Length: 229
Image (tube, rainbow, N blue to C red):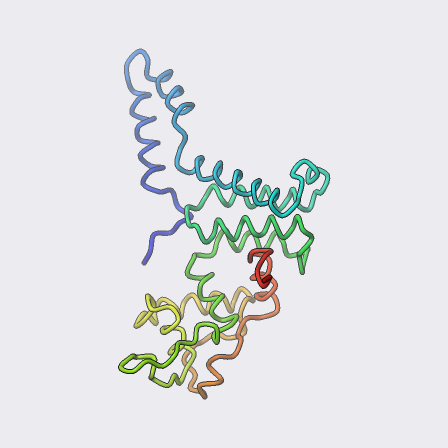
């Protein structure tokens, strides 16, 4: 399976090893380690800085004055949580979702204010694969592939898993992985199905399977510009 983006990267470990090694140098170790820590940021710190710069630029682009947000506790809370989560991931998809969450909060485009903390926590804890499968369940039809002569897409699907494996080719033949994630999404209340293998019509396999909470979550983390021409 792919590396968990919420865990420290090799760069983070290397930074810590170098700083730790400098601290052992006789006579100047402690001072050298502190100077290194000040001059050379960890990859995680750089990611967070980049996230904040991108967020500030995006807020300005959509007409939101950053200074004005200081009086909006709801937005400040979301921004703090999102920034903390950004520190813990290098996955671009999750960083984009966190940025969008703050933008939507700033614009007042929040369906369920009481769930905002929960939603940020979900972005923080769910894997990129969770998010990809949830987006698929929101609209399987969007992933439908045209029939091509000689292509496996000519096969008529008989279960959601058939469409899922076509939509996300990296999951083809990996039922043990996507079944666990599908169950997790169901138990978290984000989808209304706990299995992908029930036999049904082709049309049935393309029906939306996200729950109302799952739909609100996806709207919360999508770009404010989504759906605009």
